[in-house]
Image (tube, rainbow, N blue to C red; front, side, top):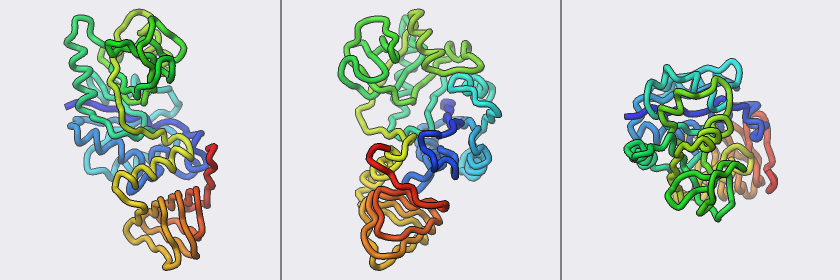
Amino acid sequence: MFSAMVLAAGLGTRLRPLTEWRAKALVPVGDRPILGHVLDPLWAAGASRIVVNTHHRARDVETYAAAQRNEVLLSREPNLLGTAGGLALASDLLGAGNVLVWNADILADVDVGALLAAQGQAAAETAPAEATLLVRPLAQGKGSIGCSAHGTVVRLRRESVENEAYGGEFLGIHVVGEALRRALPTRGCLVGDVYIPALKRGAKLRVLLHDGEFFDVGTLRGYLEANRAWLAARGSSSWEGPEARVGPDVVLEDAVVGEGASICGAGRVVRSVVWPGAQATAPLSDAIVTLDGVVAVSSLS
């Protein structure tokens, strides 16, 4: 049993205009919102309580949370507090102990149990780790994080405390130890205002490597790629939700058609997502069709 916090209060500026119509955590990937893809593995791993913070389009998230099969606690932020401040504000809801923190715009097939076990193992060591970060390994000097041969953090962003064996990309999924939680600022960033100062004072931050795919759904291109990866994981070239209607002259390729959506016209619909209830016209490529219009996605998005 463990507590988890999903950070979902951001404005989603990189994902505009989608976030003008939905909270970033609720844009659909495959058959459900991003937030659903995060909640499911946390519940499956035995989370005793999950807290989601809200700010932008908070009522959207609150409505979704109320409809879930398990309880989702909400931490409302009238003013954005940053990742560290948001975690601090939710302290009473989360309870004591370590907390698994997951950025709501990151999708990854994470072994939650292994991440928790890594922090538990670290706590039993002579010099226990104060946090465990999930990292995709990269070449030495590459990425936002540098790691030692012993699996600890030696560089964050441009702050380095010793030579690194390899670099990595921090996935925004991590376990924050109780000692660090007690020292959280009321406003600020977990990396810039908590982890970097901790690293510089000699704290141990452990790394758990993640060799699988992950998707940052914070950009339009990343959003489309996440939907395509969802299809690939199902072994499908397309998916049609319940009561979706696709015209007889429409060919779907790498396309997700949400519940109750419809596509008319003739031709291919390629690398596209049609939101639930939206209406699209073929041909169409590299596009997101919402209830409010069509968003074209360039290769540079």
